[in-house]
Image (spheres, rainbow, N blue to C red):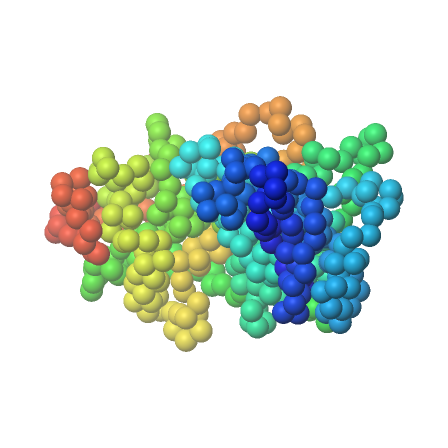
Length: 462
C-alpha cells in the first residue's frame, strides 16, 4: 500500500516554498505537485516541515483523499508507483464528490480529548479511545479509516486481528469493537436523519456479526462464554462461617469475596478503583462496559448493615487517596490485587469442600455468577432485575429517548439485594480488625496487619 508524505522543496526566486506530496510504493518514489506555496513563516526553523496549522490540515486532508482512492484501486500491489500516481491525478467525478466521508479515527481522537476535559473520572475511558485508535491503525496499516469502510468483512477481520491467533474471544475482542460500535452510532446520530430521509452513513456491521455468530454460519461458530462456577446458598454460608485463617491473604480473599457478593456482585476492578461514597450510598461506573454504555454503566449500591464491618475494615483513611477502599494502598495495581485474591480463594475453596475442576473455577468472578444464580432461583428475583443488579443493562429496554427525561433511581435494586442478603445468617460472620495503617505513613505493605480482636456481624431485622 502506498505511503504519503508532505515535503517542502528549495525556495523559488520569489522566496516561496512549493509543497509536494511524496508517494512511496514498492520501494519507488514519485512526487505530486500541489497548489500550495508557503513562506518562511509557515515553516519550522530548518525549513523542512510545515508548522502553520491551516496548511497542515489542508495537506493532511489531501493525503487522506489519496489514501481513500488507493483503498479502492483493485490489485494495487501489482502496479508501480507511476501507475498509482497517474490514477491519483485523475479528476474526481461529481458523483464521487458527493459521497459522504468521515474518518472514524479522527472522531475517536476528538472523543478522547472531550473525555479528558471532563476530569480524572473519564481518564480510563479516554485511554481506551487511544488504545482502540492504535489498534485500528495497526490493523488497517493506515492513519485514517473512513466510516464507510466499517462493513462486516472489515470488522470481522479486525476481531480476528485482535485474537492474534487465539481461537477464543479475549476481552479486547468485545471491548474494542464495542468502542467502535458506539462511535459509529454517535456519528449516525449526528449525520443521519431517518425522518427526513437523510442517511449519510449506511454501514451496520455489528448486528450482522451478532446474527452470524449466533447461527454459526460463515465458519464462525458461536463462542460459548467461559465457564464460571456458581456457589450455592449453603456454600456461601460456609464461607461466612469461617473462623480461622492460615494466612492474611486467605482472610483478605474471604473478606473481599463476601464484600463483592454483598455489593451486588461488584467486580474487583471496581472495588479497587471506586471513589464515590456518600451518605451510605456507593456509586461507581462499571469499568468493563463504561465505554460502551450511554449511561456510562453507573450504578448505586446501598450499604446494608451486614456490609458495615467489612466496609469499615477496608475503607480508605489515607487523605492522599480518593478511593473508597484502601486496596490501592495495599497493591500497586488491580492485576496484583486480583491475583492475590484468587490465590487466597483457592485455600478458601478447599476449606468449603471444593476440589478438582470446581476448585480451579473458583475465582473472584465466581462471585457474580453465584450472586446472579442465587438471586434468580433462591431469592426469586426477576431475570431483568438480575441483569440490572449485575449492571449488565441500563434498565430502560428500548425506551432510550424516554429515559433521558427520567432521573435514574436504584431503590428497586436495593430491595432485590435485600432479598438475597436475607438468605444468609450474617451473625456468623467473624471479622478480624486491621490497623488503619494507611492513614499514618502511606505504607505500601502487601498485606494488612491484623489484630486479635474479633466481632460478629448482626443482620438487620426483616
